[in-house]
Image (cartoon, rainbow, N blue to C red; front, top):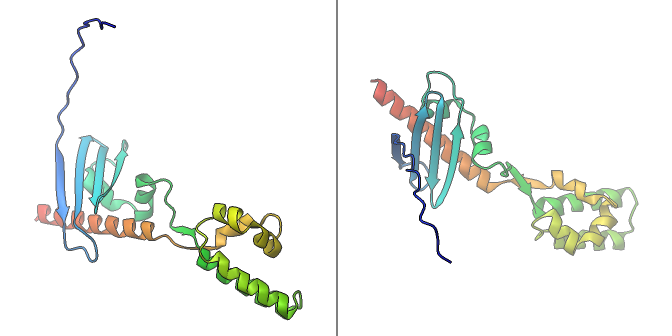
Length: 192
């Protein structure tokens, strides 16, 4: 089918100034690349990259008088992580924590004579199967019967306290702190 030759309107092209920083020497971190872009007064964008991963945030309403680098340094790391990755949580489900919780529960209930010694031993041993669970969804598929036996029909609510620190969150937090430290250092050098 022939296409009509329409004259396209010229594309609008804007130029902005981007500052690129490469940060090395941060303890136990690969080099970090940071792109800072002040788009307009009180508007800026930052992109942080480390070891093949990148995170970007845009603020359309920064505090008066601050550029993106200064603004970024004033923010709390957990707030920044929320901008970089809204789905990331500081804690994550842990089969290890769940196993320990189940074993404590079985021992407590054995002491209160809810179980005989053989039944308590069987449940204590069954708890080991939970250690490799990676999520509540995995428990639904693989261990629903055991979890119902131990915690009742709505056992999935216990996932809130069967957690451990999220290593991805900790890693990103360390990167943000290193970037803030480098930006502050650069700001001091520029002021001198």
